[in-house]
Amino acid sequence: MRSEGCHLKASLLDYLLILVTAVVLQGLGTVAVAVPRSKCYALDNSSRIVDFSSWIGLPFEYEDKDSDLVVRFCKDVERRSQMGYVDFGRFDGFNGFVAGSGHVDFVQGFYNGDLLKCEDSYDKRGRTAQVNIICGNCSNGQCKGGFGCICRVTYESSCRAFVELAIPCEKPGPRVFKGFTVGFNPRSSEIVYNGMTQIGFEMSHHEFSFRTEQINVALYISAIASVSTLVRKPSFKVSPEKGLNVKLLGSGATGSPPTTLSPTVLIVDWRCEKAHSMPFEVNITIPIEGYEPVQFFLTKMCEYRQDQGGDSARGWATFGVISCIFIVASTLFCCGGFIYKKRVERVHGIDALPGMTILSACLETVSGAGQSYSRAEDLNGGFTNEASWEHHPAAAQGTRTTSERKYGSI
Image: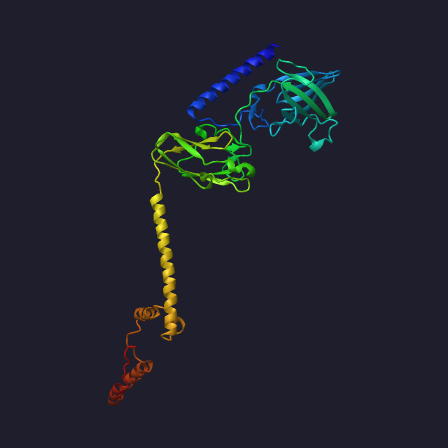
């Protein structure tokens, strides 16, 4: 009884702390539907968060003829007897706490219990248990008031137990947009998973800051196709307000409906206008019609000032346009000149290309083809006549005069 009273006081203190924190954050305008710190939470049938983190480990005991069954909330299920303890599974934090149906509000799954004589159990998970949670009292009238109790226990077999637990449930929290994710890759959800902002992005964390040289960040947004039209255009706030220039680009910035098969891309383009010792905080809000808005924080360090880069990009675009115009005009000129020379001037082959005449003249000038030269036989004849001068000078002189001929330039 004393332990239950102490636990109730601790639960009230936790609730008051959460309430005060929510009020303060709401006054600051930075409320985000963040994932709870523990896995002991569930989404009810209206998609509202019900956090049972303060209930973790709380024992509920059910006395039977030969043995007692103990449920430790969000931890494990055990059957205790004179022969010892038999483990009926431990709490599965991944999809192990879901909404129920009918008179059952929530369902907890416990798996991987003792394997003895249960080796052939489904997926070799040993003994398992399912705890059906009722918010209120038992249907048979037990456990009226107080901190809750186990209404009944049934065994499907020696390897499977069903427990009905009645407790005063926690007050539901904000409504969550189920299936909504935000991540750094099309199939990831580092920032938002199942409509809840993940730890590290629910508020400003310096250890999650981006470096100065990263001038943009691409975020991939996905949602269930049947409700994707509820997603609206995102907005942002920067703190401090001056010093960081932020723009939202891409299909996600226009409020386009994202789906699982075709996620939208939200590009956060941010450039430092001045250096700052502390990271800049960017609070991005994505409104969802009928649900709480999705909010998350991104932080960036600004160790130096960054140029906007708009003028250089514009200059490269102008250069590209001019280059395309020049290439097209040159192609049309060459084709037109070729057709004209071939049909009008009756020039064929490579000579029909425009500019080939000028190119040929330039090549001849560079190669020195315009200089005069002597015939090869005249040179040989000169040497022969020189040898005959010693014996017949008169004849040699006449031979040299008649055989000396020159050719002009081409």
